[in-house]
Length: 129
Image (cartoon, rainbow, N blue to C red; front, side, top):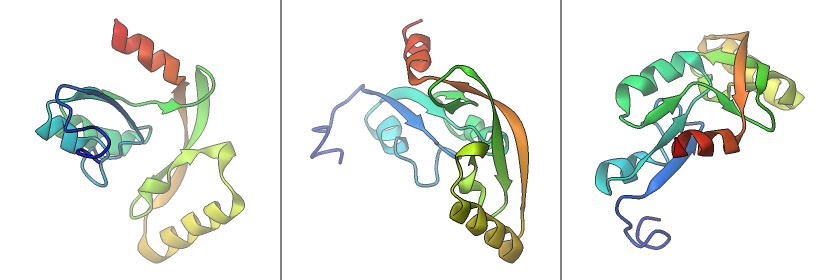
C-alpha cells in the first residue's frame, strides 16, 4: 500500500478510526514510524484507549465517530472479544450472539457506557485548529 497507493509519501496525515491499541492490526503505525506521518487516532473503548495513549505519539481521541455530535450508548467489551465493541443500538443479533459466545468460551464481559459521538467533520475542524 505504501508504494502502490501512496508512492512512499513522506510527512502525510492520517485519521485512523477504530485504532484499538494503536499497534494490533494498525492501519497507520507504519506511516507514523517510517514515513513521518502525523495524525489522529480514534478509539472509543476506554480501556483500550488507555493502552493507545501510551503507545502512540499521535493525537488520540476517546470518542466514536457517527452522524451526530451527541452522547450515545456504547457496548464496551472486555477480554478476548474487545475488538467487537460498538454502538449499542447498531448491533446485528448475530453479532451479539458471537460476542456472547466469545465471552462464554474465552472470558471477559460486556457493559454499556455513555460515550461521546462526534462527526468526522468535527475531527477535521480539530485538525485545523
